[in-house]
Length: 435
Ligand SMILES: Cc1ncc(COP(=O)(O)O)c(C=O)c1O
Image 1 (cartoon, rainbow, N blue to C red):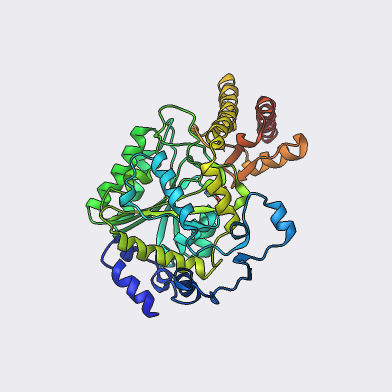
Image 2 (tube, protein in one colour; image 1 turned 90 degrees about the vertical axis):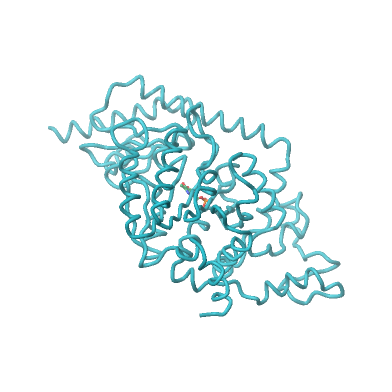
């Protein structure tokens, strides 16, 4: 094993992070090669910097006119220079400040500096590199984003256990979640991913449910299990009901117990309506973890970044820096959110105007972009196909059981007729099965 990896492992082995590393996670390190040497040169090479593979003239990177004109608010450096492996320092600090502002429970001293990754998917995949392999298992919600099994199981070879997050009630199926976490804790290690607002259900926990989830994790840590909790906060902030816990679970989890390593994966993709910008952040939090240990963990993550995409997109980072500082952003985001909230309310209104449907039953939802139906008696895929071909309406079937409806992308005035068509199609398929 590389001696730099051994050095990092020596720091990490003393705590929960080291005990949870995958075989790839153990092998990863951040080389003291080109990137480290050019970072050193940036500080000290005052005569000439012949380190980095970029082309400069007059102290600025060369830039083609079409690119410069297409990004008029960015300097050449902001538009085309390589970004550091872990992201532009000012962007990382600004994001940290913004997540602490949005999550008052967070202690800025008690968490790492966020690392920039190319989108939340990249962040989830890198964390899977670090902590999952053929010898591990991870708990995911049922239903969940379909990319989780692809990343955790097919890409990393880890076992994936689906936990039925919703029962017959109006909220989370906490007994099932507790049972699954306690069962996995018997192996000595628990790995799980929590995604709220959830894709595809659109559910976020109430404050009481959030505290109970945190409590379940505390119980198993106190019994001696090492816990990795990944908080996928892709849809953070899009909460439409007052009883929803207003912060990320990363807040309380980041200071819960020495045996709980919390990882926050978030970013502007959905929060700031920049889906194609391909930018996200990974932040670590663990009670009692020192900044030296966080730096070792960040180096492991940098090894994963360096060995795959090398670094993230530079203009995206500067665009976000400007967006965070722009006084118009807050008001515009509030306006966009209230537009989504009206679409959410239109869906709620439609559902409450209808009786129970023979095929479609909505899972609890109160946030985010989506709501999701459980389909009984007719497969979700059959409904999706008929709705698409006969009514020209697109939805997402997740296996046979779930049909996801993204109210985020349907204009408010179209929601009643769209859902009406869905109800009609599902009923007619149920009728034809009977007949
Ligand atoms: C739950 C969840 N996590 C992560 C992502 C990925 O975000 P990004 O586009 O930044 O990779 C999505 C995107 O749909 C998502 O639904």
